Amino acid sequence: MADDVTKMVKIMSDFRPGLAIVQVGGREDSNVYIRMKLKAAEEIGISATHHKFPRTITEAEVKCS
Image: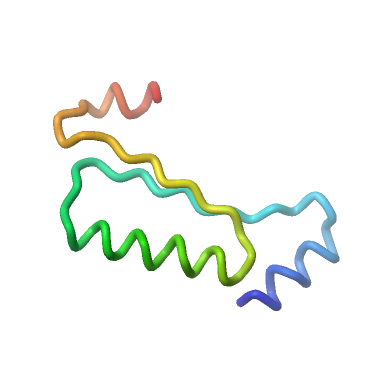
């Protein structure tokens, strides 16, 4: 996968793949999964951001964030 990212960046110099994770709440199984995804993104050379919100946030508030 890292090779694929490298090849794409060479072909298209403005190509910057990324991963955005939006988490509502803080279930431990979700936290583990997200940590794994963030680590995998780092290993293959893509940027990743994690946006964490409380369980009480509304859909409208998430959309405005």
